[in-house]
Length: 273
Image (cartoon, rainbow, N blue to C red; front, side, top):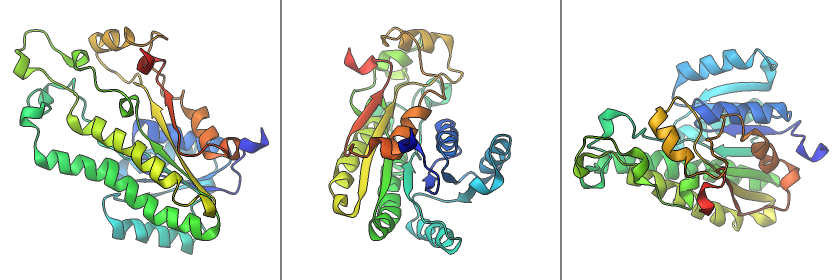
């Protein structure tokens, strides 16, 4: 079990203000790491930091407002951390835009026929380009100092296509039906490509890279949606938000020291059908 111990390690999480970002932080703190939470949402970061104080010491984590699409901003955060004596050993590329297609406002704009180029550019910039930029900055530092871990948070939609029937609503014509936007799968598939690239880029410098692909997480979705997606999952349920913590601990620690370039899919079995 000592191989799971991350005491003395510094882990940086992008998109830490999101649902799973908080869980990733809890997982790494439980393993002894010092955690840097980053996001563009400062208010939410403040709330999360206050909640973490209930179970963790104040000196074990901090937050930084960081825009993953801004290379200069990423470098500024890296320099600021270094000035505090914090050199990032673990990078979790978690930032993403995940449009919730069950919301009525996305019925028209989610469809490929009317999907805007601005949305395409912005969502790819956050979810894929952002992961590359953070890997470029923090991964380079890891390589220079002799090692580290990059973990890309993908999705079961990194290996399967969306089942658009999950999002269909009664009473709407075919061209009005909401869908999972094209960007989400493209980004998550792209993250797997980035994972493989990074896994072979700095291995001689001790930097390894893997991906974790979660399945759907139960988070207030409509009963109709939950019923539909549950029917596609052999375990017959969606994931609880804390069920990925142990996988994070494994993939970010020496417990997975010989794992490199892999995509670990945890989706209750949905993708095997």
